[in-house]
Image 1: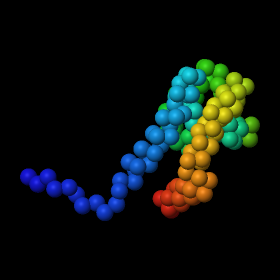
Image 2: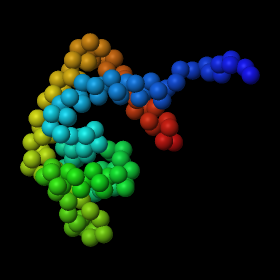
Image 3: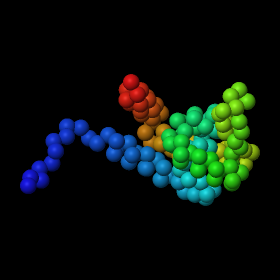
Image 4: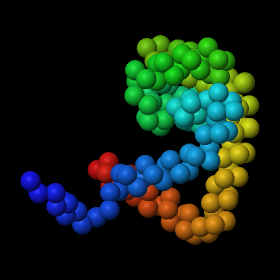
Length: 146
């Protein structure tokens, strides 16, 4: 039986993207854990911090959490007083989610730490390279969604 490697011409992009995510999250997770937040709960709060009250479908898409998992995440967050759920006034079939006062305060507090880390990255990489990284990532996402 041959053990010759498969001749890939390109580096493993999904693995590199995961590695990059984990490297960045290694700086964020300690702050999240201090506030008893999971990565998923932070992603939900980040979406709500950026967009205010939104429907659960948008939360699922922007936080990259599948519907069944999102239900559990939102239940725990509601129990912990981080979010408020309600019926969409424009469409009673939909549920909307917003950060509670406690959730908003947590977003403000954590955003300071997270933004400081991004500024540190910018200091090392340079403003131009970080901007190029964002542009390249946006281009890859757009390319793969076509």
